[in-house]
Image 1: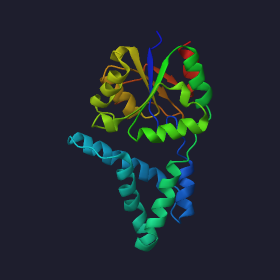
Image 2: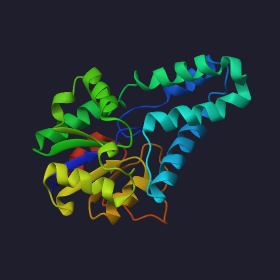
Image 3: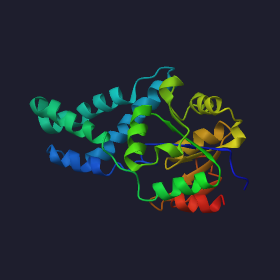
Image 4: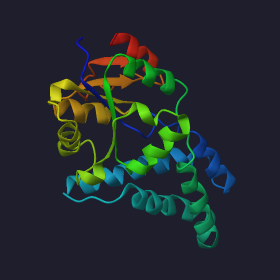
Amino acid sequence: MNRPRVIVFDVNQTLSDLAPLADRFGEVGAPPELATAWFAGLLRDGFALSTTGETAAFADIARAELEWVLRPVLGDEALPDAVRHVLDGLGSLDLHPDVVDGVRALRNRDIELVTLSNGAASVAEGLLERAGIRDQFSRLLSVEDAGVWKPAARAYQHALSECGVAADEAMLVAVHPWDIHGAARAGLRTAWLNRNGAAFPSHFAEPDLSSVSLVGLAAALG
């Protein structure tokens, strides 16, 4: 496969490791496994708004959904401090172990790297700066400037416009099959990071490449 000119990275769970958030749920007295339900609900509500032509900030939906799942467990009195403690964790996440080496390997192949997140660009900025690889990315993009969340086509088109490339010159890298599907339907090439060994859902457009790590993806594009 020819190398893309630009690789567009999803951020949450693709680059960042959300596993420590489960510990934060436990620290406030909630079941740690509730973190998965919270994040899934957050995405669900963002997608629902997009289908009706509306949008809201990731942080606002994250807070509202967190109150929704924690209130039945903790009650109203403990809720404000618990919500604050969990959300503070979003600002201190680390990258998955393969990301730093994978990112550097991709840049060594003269591929421009950007991010496109359903969250704020500032979150990606902090994540990459803490890991010492902010300089490897030319742009940190957010759907907040597109007016609609991924996987809507307009979100990917915003990234293409900002980078000045055609869809077939760009590749989306993500762990989320729904993100892969959306990018493929928008005309981008796609690479799926299969971190958990699951089969790719057959109802979505298949990725052009699949790898268990960013280092493996860089090798495949070498």
